[in-house]
Amino acid sequence: MAELLTLARPYARAAFESARETSSINDWSDRLGMLAVISSEPKILDQLNNPSLSTSNHITLLTEVIGETLPQGIANFLNILSVNSRLPLLPAIFGLFEEYKADIQKIIDVDIFSAFDFDEKHLEKLSDRLSRHLEREVNLRKHIDPSLMGGILIRAGDTVIDGSIKGRLAMLAEAMEL
Image (cartoon, rainbow, N blue to C red; front, side, top):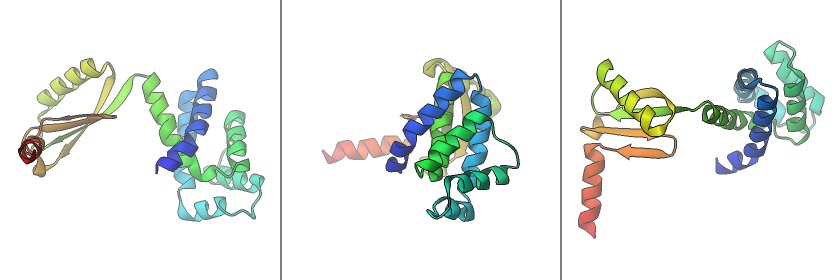
């Protein structure tokens, strides 16, 4: 997985910079999302990995499935990916592109894990506090995980805040082993 991201990163960065220069980040995002879904289908992926097909055949295959003519910038981007045999990286490129987009728009997805369900009032309060702490607009996704026993576990990008009973017991057990 790390290798895929390493290979996809320069392409995602180039796509994002091109989208930003032309003020078409949302358009690129929509199109890359469609291309990522299409290219991850097993039959399509087999064709994209087929070295006997030409660059134009790969691009024609993708555009026929989409059913529309792609903007010139995106078509050029696909051509570069195809020439370098990188079309199978489209899902990873899209994922990175979305991270860059969220970063510039100051939005972050936050997963909240709790042993019990939250009411809307508490969820709103938590969202406001996290938004201030992270200095970003927060998109909360709540998950029920009875194994936590109580408290909450918050994941926001690389940040993890573990206030669960399970996490505290694990830290206590680790401290006792020393």
